Amino acid sequence: MLERLEAIATTAAEVVGVTFGDLGLGENIVRELATLGAATPFPIQAATIPDVLAGRDVLGRGKTGSGKTIAFGAPLVEKLLENNGAKDRKMARKPRALILAPTRELALQIDRTIQPIARSVGLFTTQIYGGVPQYRQVSALQRGVDIIIGTAGRIEDLIEQGRLDLSEVVVTVLDEADYMCDLGFLEPVQRILRQTKKGGQKLLFSATLDKGVASLVKEFLINPAVHEVAGEDQASSTIDHRVLVIEHRDKSAIIGQLVDRQGKTLIFSRTRAYAEQLAEQLEDAGVKATSLHGDLNQARRTRNLQMLTSGRVNVLVATDVAARGIHVDDIDLVIQADAPDEYKTYLHRSGRTGRAGKSGTVVTLIPKQRRRRMDDLLERAEIEASFTNAAPGDTSVRDLAGM
Image 1: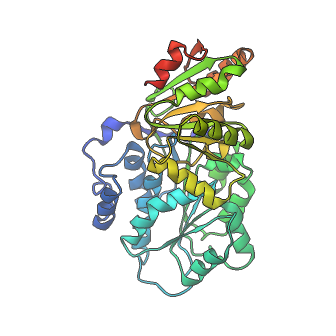
Image 2: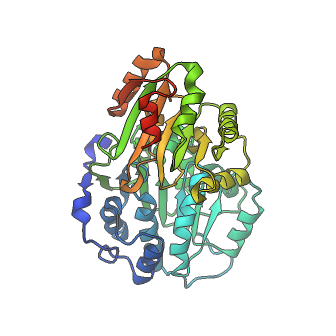
Image 3: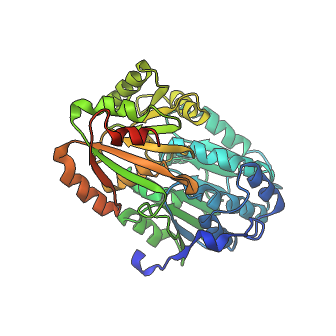
């Protein structure tokens, strides 16, 4: 079914000179976007914003970091202004927009972008996600909010408790829809969407389109406008892909040399224990590092991510909890200390660098016996990477560290 949906591809050259005002956004929102550092639209934003404002369902395809949050967030706020705006501020008013994200980290980061845009025109957002007590979330709903940003599990919990009513939601966004399906949230998402106002607008953004996403498009999107950003696939982007074939005993030493540099580095490990161990080893070696994984509570996860964002540490060692939805624009090196088993995981991890048109490097460390599997994975991902046999102190390692 998705094959019959023809995508309109937009290139960066086509949006030169275009402003957010040209796309139909109001002055307050345009000013706030400039304050956020978004003076001019990225291609995915220029492509989708007019269709969102026109009330069409939208299916947006683009790699992470292409500017999707503003692509749906800014016109969503504009649409709510058209629909009674901030005039109805009564207590316990029902939300009129819903943004679903696969993880609480992504929900928090979406809110950090959309909240100031909404506030600039008198609208309010709240975050609803699991892993924390619900009383603050319930209190916000009782006061009344306009836009909910959250994860499927807690949202469905509050619906079942009778504390959340989505019947007035006229715009619904699914961000990173493919990852939500990968995490097993397809059925909860379907149930949630059926709770929203009949005939409401649906916006679905996804890096890949597989069976789960196809079923969502088929059931909920009516004659959608389909957009993708030309030239933003990872094979043709500004990401340099390298594979170092190493001996296992050399892994820690090589990682230590790779991160001995200026700039921010994100390292992926398969297990939580190895993430902690590697972060501690780097700290002991004088490298400012911290970890991010599922054993940490939400406060520590938020704090550790903020440490990388603010520059207090240069290295974050993470499990795949960070592979999607971690938005730090200036990560220029991703190291896969443990190679992924699936090509989609490779794409999601490498999408942490090369964001918003900037350059980045992805280095994957593998033992010799994994060479064939790595070839197959890269072929499925449609990525060309250079392979190098490497040992501590080799020129290839030093060059990458000094990039």
